[in-house]
Amino acid sequence: MDDAGDPRRALRTALGLNAVMFVVELAGGILFDSSGLLADSLDMLADAAAYGIALAAAGRAASFRTRAARANGILLLILGAGVLLDVVRRTVSGSEPVGALIIGVAVLALIVNAFVLRLLARYRKGEVHLRAAWIFTRADVLANLGIILGGLLVLITGSPAPDLVLGAGVGLYVMKEAREILREARDAARSEAER
Image 1: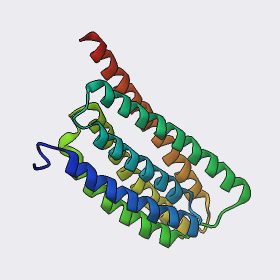
Image 2: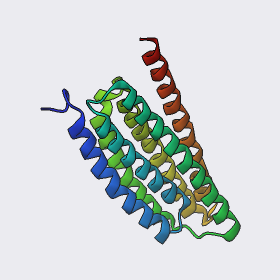
Image 3: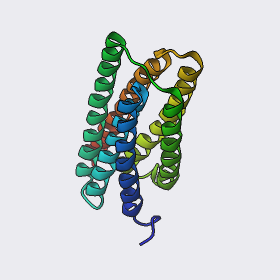
């Protein structure tokens, strides 16, 4: 089957790419002392989980798909809060992010996320679990652009503040996306109940 009739192949590709980028960005966040990269790595992990859940939901009952989308939203809320706590920790204990390397990793992540967003675009109006996967990816593209900007500002100013601000921004954005997914899951559950 092609991707137009069955989204599973697109979801498997997205899952694999996000799992790899989770490891790359996590390593970058640790090695380059970057809250922004660390935040985005956790978002990549959440995306990989979202794609895995979406794969499990394919062909299942609408109630399972709604629960899968709800689980994705809850996971994003937890990860977003964890990112905010890490930003507070780095603000208190200090950090020395490496701007040029942050930009390099974020550009790679942007390329991957833009590819996955294009791959999933045909499903953004589909079932709730597929819409959730597309929303996750859309959030990643915007976060990558922000992290590139933050890395550039760190490089220019020599200050860790832009990275910390971007890390907090990504955390808050992730939480906003989580609320959107939870709202869609709630609406889908209501629609199911009315049938």
